[in-house]
Amino acid sequence: MIAYYNKIDGRIEEVEKPVKGTWINIYPPFNHEKLKQLSEDLKIPFDFLIDSLDIDERSRFEDEEGVKLIVIKCSVLNEIEGGNEAPYVTVPIGIIFNDDVFITISAFENPIIGSFLKGMLKNFDPSRKEGFILKIFDRTVYYFLHHLQDINNKRNLFEKELDNSMRNEELTKLMNIQKSLVYFVTALRINELMMMKLQRTDFLNIRDKEEESDVLEDIIIDNSQALEMSNIYSNILNGTMNAFASIISNNLNGVMKRLTSVTIVLMVPTLVASFYGMNVPLPFEDHGLAFVFTIMFSGMLSVLLGWFFLKKEWF
Image (tube, rainbow, N blue to C red; front, side, top):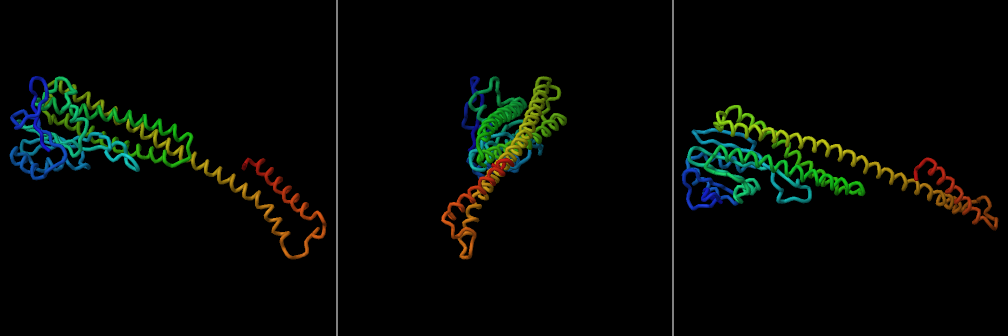
């Protein structure tokens, strides 16, 4: 789907046809024929559109014949969350622009573009391309931090559940969170490298604009903070999973030890009964209390063996 937006009377309104300064937003579902036609009409490389739809596309920027492309990774809620799926994944947002057009394209609906469409940002003007790009960067970092906080809250909740459980379900949930953190660390690292290189090469032509330059510097600092938080949460989670895996393993070993001890104690009467069940001459076989003696002897051996295991703390 392709939608066109202009700022009218201080609000972002959808329009029928694009003009200079129009924001063009491309979102799923996609029609490659329409994308091809849009590429030809606006004279932008078709590869720029296709590359932005690749979920594995790295954050980068490129300039081809006056048309510029910026790809930045953002975090979104996983629509197929559950089972062995990560609660959050990272997807690319493509930003394509020149003097006449400004295009955003993403293979997934995400809250970053949605925040602009819902008018959640003040003083937002899509015709100011550099400012628009910086706001996209800023919202990207904002949602990374927001989702990291949610991940940390989930981690604490699952840890409390794991305190009173020996099941693998909670460990699986923690492993899914770990997947999201791996996605976050990778995306934030390449986002940081991309923005630092973008700043160094002055790709946005904002070096002489103090306000925009300061905003980009602040975004890079916030991105570094999000990256550090992701690494910290990932390290904590790794330690937690290893610790609880060891605890579960130790608990299982304790249960197996107790069951083995009980089996050995119960085996003694069975062994004695087996001996006295043989069809051969046996001690006290003609005594009237032979059965009672056998039971008492078996019980005494079981009690002694149980006392020994208890002393060794095997029960």
